[in-house]
Image (cartoon, rainbow, N blue to C red; front, side, top):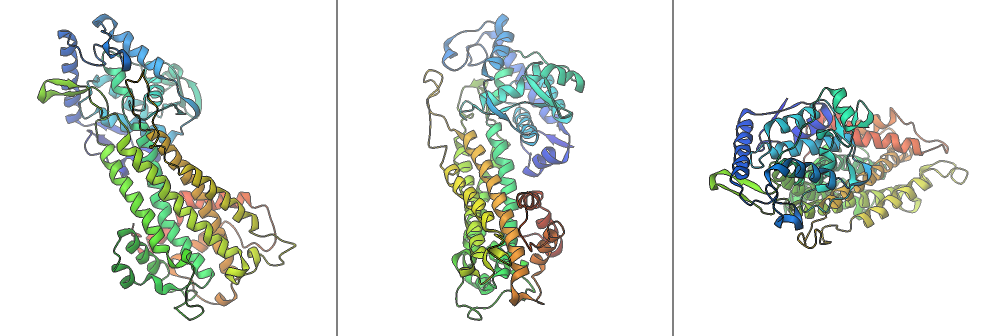
Length: 510
């Protein structure tokens, strides 16, 4: 059980709810804070104060007064009018994370929502009622308005939701789960949709997966080094301590641990004086991506325990302030950076693939296949990897440098942070497939390198090789490869190699 109060949610908690079925509940302190803020909203209404979104319309309509009698209809109209998303639905893991992050932000007690409304949202998380949320349509500034409105629709018995794998009307999904929809009153609709939780959810899960893939990149690149008898001297700690970037030093240390005991790597000038950059500079390149991911994770840790709606109830000041905490810029820039960091993992991986399949560079059979000519081997697998890397370069163009004014120019600068997060997610998908191809090529190269016959692999690379070969055997003649790439990609995404290596040599540095 994960108890939330808006202050102590961790990325590990989010992962456990999204992937491991953990339940969610409010802390007692959170309940008190929520109730206190709600009482203040009711005081505003009773005193007929002019407060944005409580006694006024929204956006450009902030100068339109709303009566107490119209407040319930105002909140319903807000949700149904703002549910304008388009495109494919976010997957279940992302939607559960969106719901959890929104619930956590509301639990801090600065938003004025009814406790009972928030408890229904949490009940939906716990019973796996998953709102159907289209991926596209957020500007990432007045919060993720459109996608969060789709999240709220089933909460009020409207829209669509997935339940037990079926897409149902929101009302039917709630009935089947035994949950009673709510009726929103003053401030509640705005409190539910004015936040950065969609971009944060997508970016958080992508950054977490990228962290695991960065570790795996070290392991796979070590296999590629063994397949080409690379020079392991470049990982000595003394070399990296004099340029002490954390990711660089950690990667060098990982490579030494992964390759410990290997008889397939070489020393400087034993076979060649230098390796190409894609081997010699693994610590510098992988390390830079890790530093990028760590920077993003630091920003995410702040954002998941922040208040990002509007207006914000400040009880100590006896005021409801209409500010700008909903603006996605603090995470939009990091999510663009995240996409670039992940793309570089694919860039260097694809170049290692080229060195493995190119006989002029590797000394191995052309395209890693015997009887070449009759067989094409991994020729087109490299094409596929190159295509994904090229697509990543297009996707890596930053979204956050763009802004289109909205709401009749009342909201005249927006972050496009949700687009940045979705692009980073798509770059991660492509990168996972590039790493899968390198994994296949590295194992094939190990099998074909005559210098390695009878020699031991490193402690970490031996584990990775055995895991892959337990599912995919050495290629001796051409065969259909797309299924094997997906099997390798599943190995990449399920993190089995990293888990097994870490169980043997201890947690890899990141």
